[in-house]
Amino acid sequence: TTRLATLREEKDHRYEARMEQLSNVYGSMAPNEAAQLMGKLDEDVALELLERMPGKRMGQILGVMDPVRAIDLTKSLTDKRKL
Image (cartoon, rainbow, N blue to C red; front, side, top):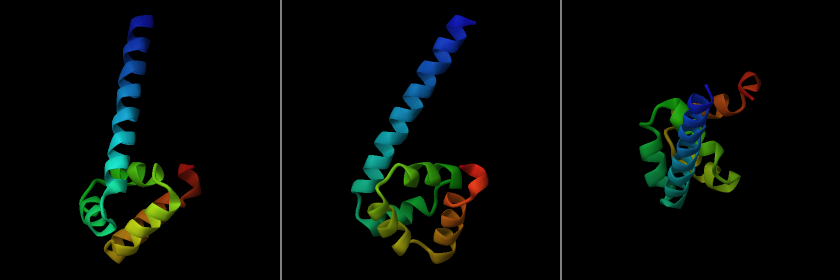
C-alpha cells in the first residue's frame, strides 16, 4: 500500500507540474491564440489552465474567446459547488 501511495503521489506531482507548465505556455501566448486553442479543449482542462493564470491574463483570454464558451467557463469558474 505504501508503494501504491508513493506511485500515486508521484503521478499527481507530474500531473500538477505538467498543468502548471501548460498554463504558463497558454498564458504566454497572444490572448487571441490562447482563446482559439482553449475554446477547443475539454472544459475541465480549460478550467484548470485558466485557474492557474493571473486574473488579468484570464480576462484577456476570456475577452476574445467565443462569447458562449467564455460564459460557460465563467459559470464553471464561479460555481460555488466546485470550490
